[in-house]
Image 1: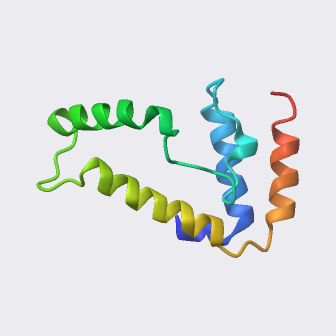
Image 2 (image 1 turned 45 degrees about the vertical axis):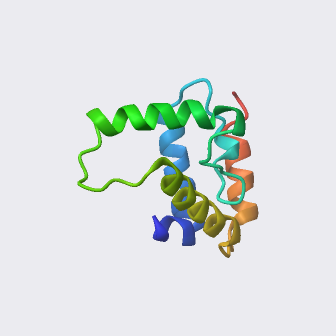
Image 3 (image 1 turned 90 degrees about the vertical axis):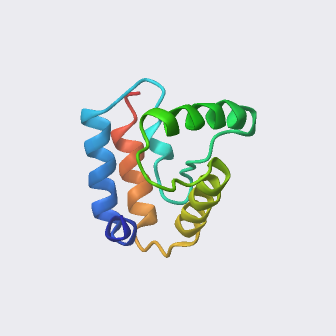
Length: 105
């Protein structure tokens, strides 16, 4: 992950790959840039996500001591913060590439 965040061209290749092979209608790949991507659920959905996560802990998460939902959100917020603050030498080129590849959406 760190390599893709530090290499704008690699990051864009990953975004283009996802756009081509995994393109649900609700995904806007122009928002997949590191400075604007947000992994946190909207405030109106936090409790729904919490309930879903708690259900998954009983069926799909096999760690001995999994993170609580609040710990998970803190961890995700830290990742988001590092993305927002990451130095990006290729930001302009990346933004232009995304706009070109998503113009047909």
